Image (tube, rainbow, N blue to C red):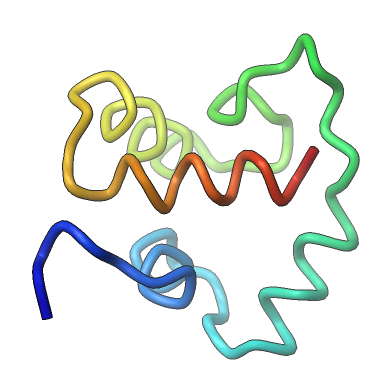
Amino acid sequence: MDASHHLFSELFAQLGLPDDDASIGAFIRQHRPLPPDVLLAQAPFWTPAQAALLSDEVRRDADWAEVVDQLNLALR
């Protein structure tokens, strides 16, 4: 698989969260809707390490940025 295409489950694993479909769905349901004026990485439910990972990946437009953007949309 091309390293630039990550799955939601892989992002959740990177964040140290349960990465099965049911857990991902529950996480999204629990934390949405994220207010439009709150950046994804600034959401109050992230640990500092999780927030840093999300922020860094988007800022650097790294290979995880696409799936981070997908998570951002899912939480809106």
